[in-house]
Length: 584
Image 1: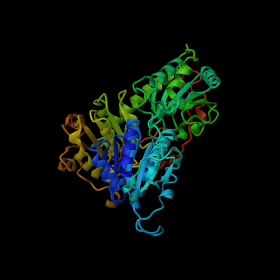
Image 2: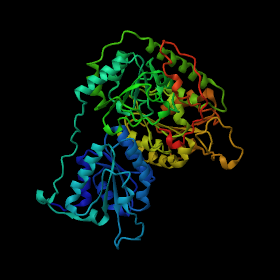
Image 3: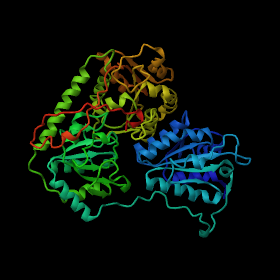
Image 4: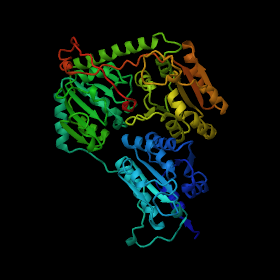
């Protein structure tokens, strides 16, 4: 039998856990593992990124778009530090990722070149599991434990493998007593359902409500039919978190849109007028937009009991899988014959859609960015994926892009880190090369890492069955990005350098389209979506278009819809200040 190195064993365990690809940035401390991956002929494939941070975003993007476990590689020191951003994204959005980090220190620890205490460095972001490999015989079991922990806790884990260990020869497995037997990979997680008494209590609470609102988060994925049926039984209105936007068909007449500062007035009105709230798989942090304390009685469904009651008090907590829990609830819910509340919600939705149309039609120079997203809505492919970056593009996506049912959309929801969209798009495309992918970002994210990662796209795209990866760049030349509605500064130091994004794509052998006239936006989308290769669509947009966040619900909104018609509102003028890191 040929000798196997520890690096070979790592590759074997990756295959056993059905990992299709590994994202990373090569370096000396991880070179034996990269060589072992190269020897496999692409199973699993090694995908080199232009930077360790984008490699970790790709691994998290893989977990988000595919539902599998993402894997990223890096070496010690500054390379390991760069993984943190993508790993924190995975932690805060509850996605399983395994980071494998190499270390190559031959002398004594303490001041060695590029030495960083890796256990401490990853101790917070990978707090569920950080381990060093120590002996060749135990590495397989160590990898299994890292994968099992990542899957069970829906969080990132880390394994540190010194280079000399990666190169070491693995002997035949020892006895069971030595603790070297690997686990069976890929076993499904346990079925989780609430107690019968809690389901009974939840059904009684929901049935007794007169004005029911349902707030849906990413945990509602795969439960769309059940959510719609519950809403119809209760005559409820529905809003979603940003991460929950792809869950339901947004064309439903009672779908009020996204809740929060980037969301819609209809969603804020839904929260302001409800007396009963059902939360499904959401950890939405926009608590300013939730019902006032004691306004609404609440049922919360979440697979992770630690999230229950963290955003809004839950009268009945239901720990369980969303779809199965909702099916159990439906067996206990009676249909509500009186539909005044539903009619009021639908009127609110109609008003918002009229306002949205007016905003899109507003004059801007040269292009209204809201128009760019609306024109995409009319041309959205019926399948595929969308990745969205942080910035003003998040507002326009949340309000003006209608996702067809089945199209997966992802963003860096809770961390809110700029620069995620293009790495996500690469991961989404590799997960389904026969499906179109769109990345939506601003010039800030494009200059941060997008220009570099287009090199990765140019290196990979000819292997894709469907070559369509369209990168929309909203070029507003605004250094401060998030503060829509301001006049551009006359100080050149406050203006973002104007880069020929479409031209850069063409230099790389990709397609590039630049549009700076509103009447040509639709044609630009047609050209980009019909291209025979990945395309950068650069839209030159007006930075002064106001972001116009909706006003949150306040205490005076309680009972607003008690008689079936909106009451007169008296609102305090409240200044809401939110940093870009809060855009989740």
